[in-house]
Image: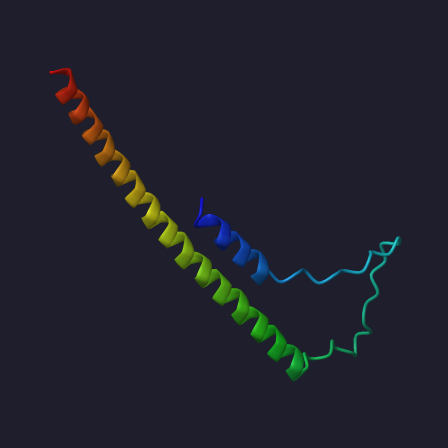
Length: 98
């Protein structure tokens, strides 16, 4: 539990809040562009910002994967320790009965 609390706090601080969406209009008509116009290509700044955000998400995912692996290893070590302690308790109980 001690390991999970700081991990959760760090994850919360790294989460990027979702961008607010505007409320949907009451009518279901979606305006379309005239056939001769195409949507504007993304600006270099937008592409750079998207690339940066994408890299942040990848980095966060990589960090989380490493943290999960570490927690799984710690969990396995604790389980092994519990098995060893249970065997020791049985041995001591057996000695005390004699």
